[in-house]
Length: 204
Image: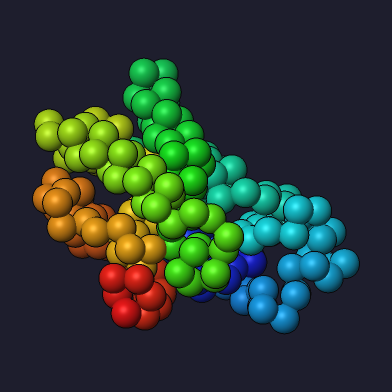
C-alpha cells in the first residue's frame, strides 16, 4: 500500500496512525502541499478534490480519511477495529460522523486558524470545539473507548489527531480529564505514531 500523506494534516495522520496500529505495511508518500503538489494532474488523477490522504492499494485507490479507515479495517478481516455487530458498528460510524463534522468544524478549524492562517472566526470555532469536547468528556464517563467497546476502534483513531493537537488551535484540554486519559490510552497502543507538533496557539 501507498499512503499519500502530509505530516501536518490530521486527516492524513489518522490514516497513517491506523495503518501502523493495525500492522499494515505501507509506504508513506509525502505530498508537498506548500508547493502545490496536490494540484498537479498526477495527484488529481488519484483524488479529483486535490486532498490528502489517498490510499493506493494495487489498482484500488481510496480517497478520504474515513473511507481509508473503513477500507483498511475491512481489508485486515474481522477485528475489534470495526466490529461486525450491527449495534457496535453503528456506534463506530456515529463517531466517524462526529470526526467528519463537529471535530472538523471545531477543533480542526481552530487549529487551521493558527497553523495555516485559515479565515475562520477563532472565537466561533473554539466555542464549537469546547461544546463537542464537553459531550465527549461526558460520554467517556463510563467508557474506556469512544464506541463503548472493550477494545479501540477506528472511531477512536478518527477522533484522536485533532483532539490531541487542539491546543495548537487555542483549545485548552486541561478541563477534560477523561479525554486526556483516553488520549494517553491511545498513545500506549502498540504501533502508535505521534502527530507532528507545531508551535502554535497554546503550544507556542
